Amino acid sequence: MQLFDWIVLSLYFIMLLSIGLWAYSRVKNSADFYTAGGKLPWWLSGISHHVSGYSGAVFVAYAGIAYTHGFTLYVWWAFTVSIATLLAAFYIAPRWARLRKFANIQSPTEYLLVRYNLQTQQLIAWSGSIIKVFDTGGKLAAIAVLLNVFSGTSITFGILLAGIVSLVYITIGGLWADVWNDFAQFIVQLLAGITMFVIIIMNMDDGVEGIFTMWDKLPEGNSSFFNDPYTIAFAFTMLVINFFSYSGGTWNLATRFISSSSPKVAKKAGILSSILYLIWPLILLFPMFAAPLFFDSLSDPTLSYGMMARKFLPAGLLGLVLASMFANTLSMTASDSNTISSVICRDILPKLFPKFRNLTQKEGLKLARITTFCFTLVTIIVGLNASKFGGIFGLIVTWFAALLGPISIPMILGLLPIFKKSGSIAAIGSIIGGLVVFMILKMVEQKSLAFEMGAPIMASLILFIVIGLFNKKPVPEKVTELHLNLSKKFND
Image (cartoon, rainbow, N blue to C red; front, side, top):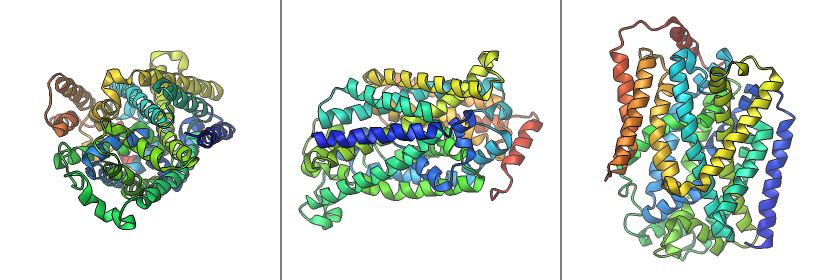
């Protein structure tokens, strides 16, 4: 990287901190800090939902998959996310917005106390918070790898840089800082992604026609929709996982719907995010698909995107691309920190320590900022030790995706009246069953990636439904009332 690249990257960090300082003036209480006061417009919520759904790991772990396996990455990742988010937009997103309006929730696990009981809520809150520590740490490690490729700085320095910047602006600005950073980084990402796309086409032998002709020149299987181990079974598994994740099982994405001004706005936000996932990754991933044409037989495919950018981009533009990658990562890590903080402050601490109940607005906001700071600090520590958890892909894809299902199934299906018979026993049974299956699979070598990823969530899903079917107890009145409120028309 040249001096001009560092200037561009520094300007991006200054912009982030400026957004945080601006948002600080808009945050008056914990509702503003966690849900933007329920005032997010559909376009801002939709863009924020989209960019909060992926991080710098796309340019590291996913870039490696694009290099070795090709187009299948778009099929099992972006396409399945688009379909999953579209389903969520119609059936789940409006329910999150209505929950905030009639139950005054600020965290995605807050409603579980009414839907199930205290034990279920605490199990999900604690489990989900711990899992997110590893997921977020992996994303910080991913952006550090990219900074290392671009500039030669150490992995440790990159993790500390990304973590500290994220820590500062999200701690002072809350969700408002997060969503406006999402919007700013989406613009930066568009500029950087389109620039990279055009420059790669200009350097291809067939020019614009190379968009269509390059696939015959890539390694065998790279043009296929499915390329082992990323089979059709794996894609279907990811579709199921992504539905539960992008409809709110990944808590920071639920927050985008919760913070929408109305159920109708939440639905429109989900549709916008779905459209963006369908179209934008085709441009964003293109240089990754083309990488084997320019770098043959890389020993570490995860470095392919960084090497492509370093080879083709002039000074200044390299800094812009790196800024967009930082933006992706900081968007997700910051929103994770904000959402986990809401769960800790609203659902964990008040149950453990009575002194945290009935706080004043000023005290609640202070607690929100302290917990956000502490969570981000822990994720930095995990990121520094990512290699001990199976590396970046292991942390983000294998660990998080496999563990997500058991936690998210009671959360998402609990919103739907069709599963009203599945109470606390079904919820706890499904979580424990899914986690047990995950641990068993970790002890036994698996030949099928689809089975390794899908078995925990399918075990949880089956247990949740079956236990509910055998439940002979009447549905509690509070659960019936909850579902009646969530099932009202979503046009208000």
